Length: 318
Image 1 (tube, one colour):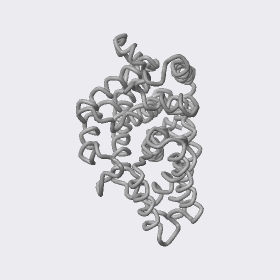
Image 2: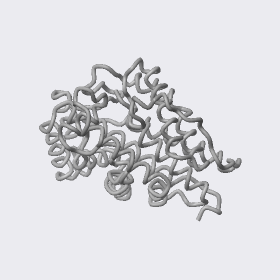
Image 3: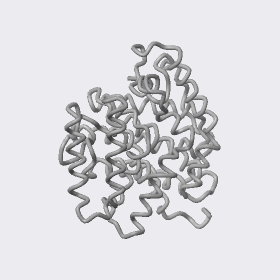
Image 4: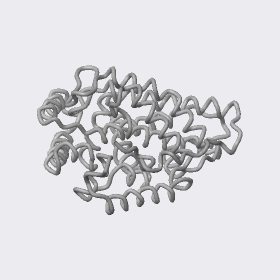
């Protein structure tokens, strides 16, 4: 399967990794905290239950090729990656630097999981957000959601758009059976956007949908689990999840959207029996072998942004 960062034909053209700006002791400590929060966000997504069709500590969801232990091995393999991405952002790293770091991380993940794709999407989206947070630190800007998104678009937006357009060109020129990426196959078959387009737009599903719902639920007194469940279902209700299209086509994607919308229309986790309703949804997804993995990645990204905003910063960061 092709990675999100670079076409397979270009993997041999890696450039040396570099950071242009020195990293001070204070910023270095903050970068480490950003990396820790990225890992914790992936862990929070893993242990969350119930998640329709997704792996948790309770069961393997719709998956026969991975368990929670597979995810733990993957997480361990990524322990240095998010710090490297944060430091690349601090050091004014270009997009090629970020891509190279992502390629290495994907290779380490696949070695750790014996070839199972557990976190490819998260490596892409969470890695970029770590770099954007690092960029904020280097500019003396507070780690607020709008600042992180602005840093991503201002510093790498043009290259992300070019990266997305290159993928679209690849889709138009190559026979579907020769496309190695499930996401590219889905994009070609159903004319929908995927992770690259989401990134090029500054992750609107995170900043405009999932994060606001997460914060709303928390403000209303919901627990972390309940707020994350509400946020996950909001993502499922609105986004085009290429994992669902790949597994079951348009019918699967529509079933996921309608299931999520029904849960939210009934009140989400405000319902007295929300847990039973969410577990019922989970069983239906497992029965159909569906797994909204793209929504899970963006849920982790949303929780990451929420947590990063709570980081204590020196007074200089206004």
